[in-house]
Image (cartoon, rainbow, N blue to C red; front, top):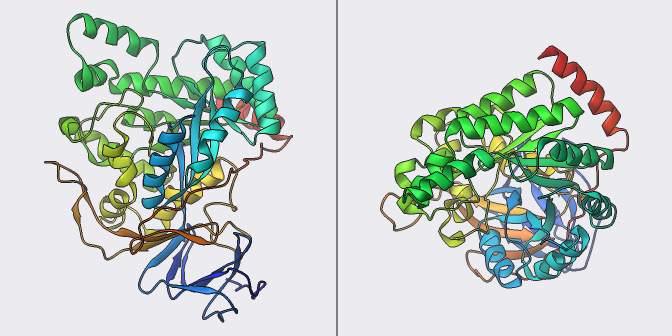
Length: 450
């Protein structure tokens, strides 16, 4: 590694000294100097302290990139944005990509503006997935507007929602021409809605109805169908949250054919079972908890890169109780790194770097290098194992967040747990103009090979 020389002096700098820097590629015992412009100014061993620079002693801590959460559902509610954003920051998250839906009659760009206004007090850096619920000429124009003017490069859809296949493929095709990515969930759709209606008539509600109406084959077939539709058009695709082996098999098969597929998983689906529903509220916006037999293939897929990233899904009902928010890092550390399923570098990959790469903000986010945003998580790997909450059956976590640096300033600290306000909007550039042609050629070869 070539160490960078000091490029900033004076100003309100922050030197993170004495820790072990862990990235998705390697670990080094080096210092990190955060410049007064919010970017990393220098990295190297035993850096000199510039005049007027604050020093944060990293001691025996691990210094990692700030967590990138690729899937939250906070929306255009300033109060919720503030409370959920504060909880995310305290958990080590410095950047979120939030799902933004436009109410009927409102254009995508207007919905983005409302959301952006609400997000100004989030406490974390923010970006948006625009949710597409129907397809017409107005939506097509709105997609073009938000990609060109609002820093949006992704659109979220349901694998089996209200749109028929021709409409879904219209969205995928148009997104590809714009250089944007489509992201699909696989736990809902028309089959699940049909089953849920029958369960309702039978008086079955809540978590039981959620699990029965979205059995693993439904999620697997939904994910497989989304991948197929993107593949025949030659488009890259993102899927998740993934909670079943059926979905993992569909993703792995597509990747083996050469198709570009990225995917996310929630920590709850790695550690909790269907019998644990009492430890957290039912959330119809996320896949249900599964039986324990699903854990091993999900962990294997995460370690192998088939599932490249973790997400919180934060923002739905019962957010404060969600293990995926407060416990995301501790669950992955305890059940992943401490259990030997993940290395520390893989831990960084699945919590920051891979999401930043998939949504085209790497190395600005998810990296520790000169010129990257100075977003850092100082993690205590020795913090003992403990229950995430006092609730019976609460999952076990270990490790702990000690300090969070966002934009070169300490935004949260265990010694001063007041959460900094503000946060920047993160423009996510669309992918290259030649992406459509290149990916189409590759996808056609992949489909032929399948």
